[in-house]
Image (cartoon, rainbow, N blue to C red; front, side):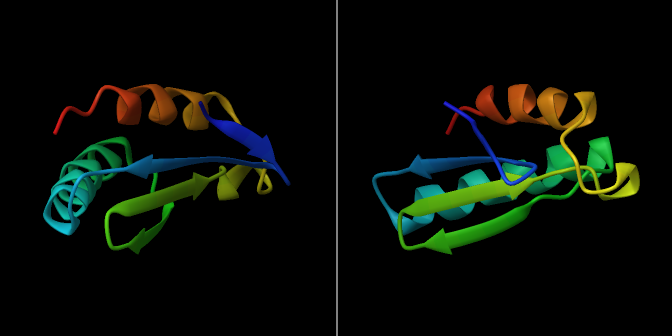
Length: 77
């Protein structure tokens, strides 16, 4: 579930290994590049935390953020 806090959407993803987490980040990078919308990504071994907002709209959450969150949820590792 995505959390809305301090004008950002964020979510934590947990994987079985560091390698799975990195694979997820790699797929995520391709999606974000295609959408031209780049989140903050924090990797701690098998945990990946993503947070983002739309900087061009004044650092608030917009439809672009919700679209990206749905695309990220569709990533299958």
